[in-house]
Amino acid sequence: MKYLQLLLLSLLVLVSSCCGAKKTIKSQSEPTKELAVVIEVPDVVETPKISELPQPPQETEMEETTLPLPPKPPKQIEESTFNHSRWNKLLQQFVSENGNVDYKKIRDDRFQLDIYIDILTHNMPTEEWSKNEKLAYWINAYNALTIDLIRRNYPLESIKDIKDPWDQRLWEFGDKWLNLNDIEHKILRKMDEPRIHFAIVCASESCPKLQNEAFTVDNLEAQLTNATKEFLVDTSKNELSQNNIKLSKIFKWFKKDFEQGGSLIDFLNQYSEVTISSSAKKSFKDYNWDLNE
Image 1 (cartoon, helix red, strand yellow):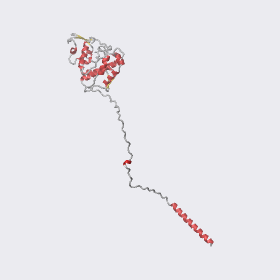
Image 2: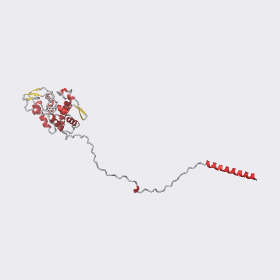
Image 3: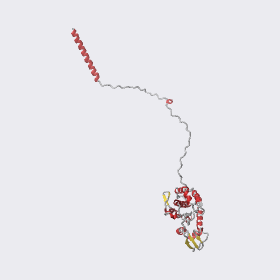
Image 4: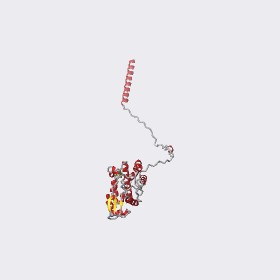
């Protein structure tokens, strides 16, 4: 009986162990389930009051300051206001009443001449300029550039010591490099004013004297007439009488310019102190190319 009780007890333990094992195996075979965490969000989010919003920094009143304006670009001179006062000052400073030029001082004090030439090259005449404005401009330009040419090569005894002096393109006007021949023959002579030949100079003794004042539009007529009369009355350049005239070679080189309104004698009689006969004997004087200093 005792043995029977022990047997039954063993069977109960065995059955109990098997059931537990099955339960364990079943729980391990089931997939692991993910857990979702749900956070409850209220339906209405309370908006912060305006007073609670961060305020922008208050602008502080700055002291008003005045900044310097940038420099204005150089303004081109209008033709109605163009003047040659700087050139006039240079002429009075370095040119005598007789037309002699102090080239040494001009060479040593070149700043003002450089400025004037720069003004000329950046303010060329336009179609709106009057004939007299153009004449005054180019006459002054020719004389200033001639002095500049001498200054660049000084010291020297004659302008002819310079190689091709009238063909050197040293000055840029607009987009063109000009020489003295360009100004005289392609510009001034085409303006049909023969008296220009007594206003422009070639830095030589036999040339018309360099006036020690600038040519201006307001005084141009009187200045051209005066320069012509001074040239004719100068016996080192011309000797005039009723029946015999010894003329500067300028009248030979540019004969056609002086015969536009008649004969050469007709032109001379407009400005000569003596009346020259149309049958007067004519000859030409030697030309002195020594420097006019």
